[in-house]
Image 1 (spheres, rainbow, N blue to C red):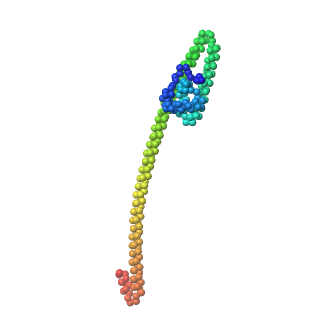
Image 2 (image 1 turned 120 degrees about the vertical axis):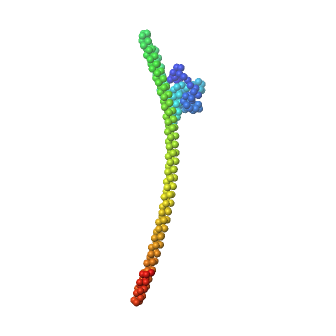
Image 3 (image 1 turned 45 degrees about the horizontal axis):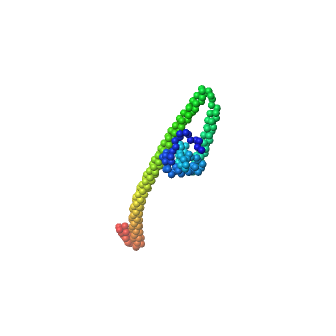
Length: 235
C-alpha cells in the first residue's frame, strides 16, 4: 500500500507523464513494467497505473541513468521502501501524539501552532524542491544543447582541419614535383657540360698525341735535315 502519497496529491495519466518527462507513451509503459518487475509499487485503478510526483521522479531517473535499467530500478525500489517505512514511522508518531494530547487549551494552541509552522516549513521545502528540480531540469537541457553544439563544432573543425591537411599535402606534392623536374633539368645540363668537357679534353689529347708523333718523327730524321724539326712547330 502506498503510504507515501499525500492527501489531495495530483495524479497523472500515462499521457501526461510522457509529456512531463519528455518521453514517448510506450516508453512510460516500458519503464513502469521494469519498475514493477523489480518490486516497485504503483497506485492503480484496475490494471491502469496512476502516477504521482514521486513516480515521475523515478521515470526521470530511468530516463537519465547510464547504468542498466534493472540496476537503477532496484535502487528506486529501495528508495521507495525507505519512504514507505518513514511514512509508517510518522503515522505511528502522530497516533501516539494524539493519545497524549494535552487538555490545557494553551498547550493545545501551542501544539497546533507548532504543527502549522511545521506544515508551512514542509510546504516551503516542497516548493523549493520543485523549484530546484525545475532549475536542474533546465540546466540539464542546456548542458545537452551545449554538448550538441560542442560536438557539432568539433566535427566541423575536424572536417576543416582534414581539408586543410589535404590541401597542404597537395601543395607539397606539387612543390616536390616542381623541384624534382628542376633537378632533372639541372642534371641534364650538367651531364651535357661534362660531356662537352670530355670531348674538348679528348680533342686536346688527340692534338697533343699528333704533335708528339710528328716531333718524334722529325727527331729521328738524319742530322742534315734539322729544318724538319722546325717545320713541326710551324704547323
